[in-house]
Image (cartoon, rainbow over all chains, first blue to last red; front, side):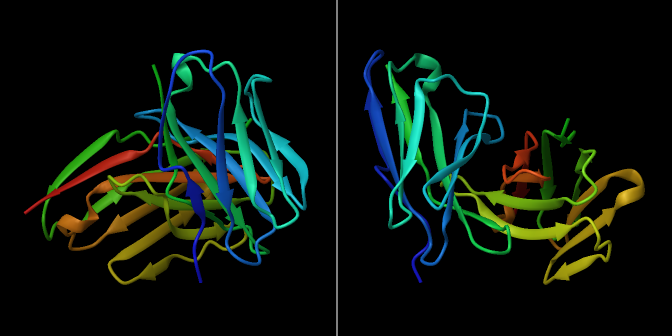
Length: 111
Length: 113
């Protein structure tokens, strides 16, 4: 079975632009979570979605939004990019046992 | 508040040495889960183990072992006979009544040949 997939792998944007990151969970998993990992730190929780409903939101500004589609894939959108948004964005999917399996991440660089 | 502390920022060992990575957590939840993840240079977080708060049995998986002690709020990870391929950043994480993972700051392990 395929693991969690994310696209794109790398992305370079300039300040003020917006970006859309995509994630496909493991087959059969209905929950997707997004994390931001700044260099040298642990991942920070951004959002969790389950069955297309938002179940949790971390301490991030409204510039960050997400949604989940009927096939359980998800998008993370970030508007009005700032230099500080440069990070590795990780998507995790989880099934019934609460274990979260992570994708390879999207490395976003904001210039 | 929930918190995970990994006091060791970086550890260097020579191959075949044993190494223990420390993890201390804080939570008021009575039911919670603890995790360890490995992050190699490629960046992907690799799931290693999940332990729930009611199961204090130590676990061994090959060269890996985990020591969960509720009395000291610790969930330490030991690699026996370390290998160069073990070089990575290791994260301890906590999951309580919410579904989000709270991560520590990670411990960078470097294993030299």
